[in-house]
Length: 354
Image (cartoon, rainbow, N blue to C red; front, side):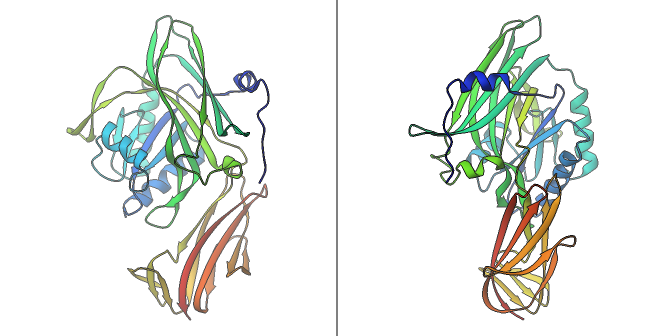
């Protein structure tokens, strides 16, 4: 395993290289669940909006049935009503309808609202030494107003390509892991503050190490201290206290790995003559099966390789589908390579008679 060492003066160096916020960026928290059949359209639409770069827009996915920290946020802070629900800018807008038009309308309205002139910057790097390991996160905030600013800083740690899949077996994007930091912020006029954070994954995510650093995205979000009444089931049901977002900064590695999902066959389903029949304990296929794969990377996908039990069966360049005919229990593996040479893998174990 690769090892990194802390360089003396890392705090000062990071403070000089912090990544700026987009002044009027919109930040959304998405309540979702892996068992929710209505959630995949919401996940796909939001990722398409983000990937198009048509709006200054970031989002994190709160997978409530997989992550207790995500559930605590959407239940206790947002009093959510159902999956999926999108909370934009801390509850300034709440959208239950999974449609591009509804999301873009809410994003546009959020962009048009007034907010304090607060700058925020964030960066992150992996540290590894005998005393500690994990992410060193630096957040710098500057109050450009001539009056005092009070708010709450929340630093979100997310996986760009999640360990969790949605109901359609597609990978979640920007799936929330936990907060690296939550704390009050008080800035006098034109005051600047730097906060350093050490996020150690060992306690809750011990499988994360330096090899995963390019799959981690960090969002530093400033919420105003002013309380507003909002509703998780608009117009007037499931009330909660909303604290609007004033500024957001994101650290997203440029060389993040591609996302890949074996959409069909899915884990734990019966397929007969290429048709999905019913959810069962393990994947079973009767008759030949069209393997459907979804792969994405902002730099572009170079190829997708198909393996069965470790043996290369096909290399796909454009249409990510392959006809599978076999007999017995097998491991189906798909590996996506982006234009930069980075790769990601998805695996489905199945019993097939074809």
